[in-house]
Length: 102
Image (tube, rainbow, N blue to C red; front, side, top):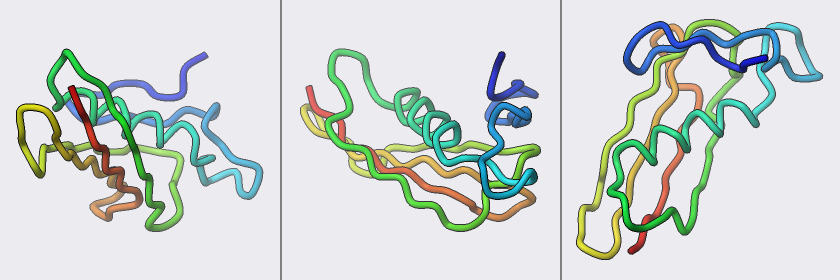
């Protein structure tokens, strides 16, 4: 069982295992949140960890193809802030910010 099938760098297709209880076309927020945290971890350095993560749902999270992007907003030696965005159909549907510290 997997929640997502990778289609290429930063692109995934949600499987039926991400479906939430409200509509068969929408995902439960848990799997997309995990995908966003994975993206945050991918842009932050090793040797530390995420101290705080906030996930904002910007709309319905459709079951289908998703694009994930992430970048560091505030670089630093001991503290950094990163953001990851999840888009579907060219529209942002979720965003996560994470504070990393050494």
